[in-house]
Each structure stands twice: as structure tokens, then as C-alpha cells.
Length: 61
Image: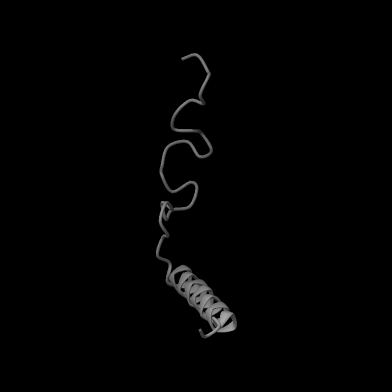
């Protein structure tokens, strides 16, 4: 039986991580928002800057 080539598998994982990291940096440079990111900066939403839109949890209304 042939022995597994662990160094090949490790290299493939490293290349996949590198590719993913480069893709992420490219998306970031293009200015496209990532998953879960709203894409805006603070203060763009309008209203009073720095004021929360909803009251914090546990605060009586």
C-alpha cells in the first residue's frame, strides 16, 4: 500500500488559503461589501450622528 503524501495535501491547503486571502483583498480594494457588512460608513445613515437607531437592550422605554 502506498503512503499518503501529506506534504502535497498541506501545500494544497496553503494555496487555497492564499487564494482566498487574495480574493478577499481584491474585493476589499474594489469597494464591494463582504457578507454581513452593510458597506456604509458611520454617519451616512442620516439623523443624529452617533445616536443609536434603537435603544440598548435592558433600557426601559
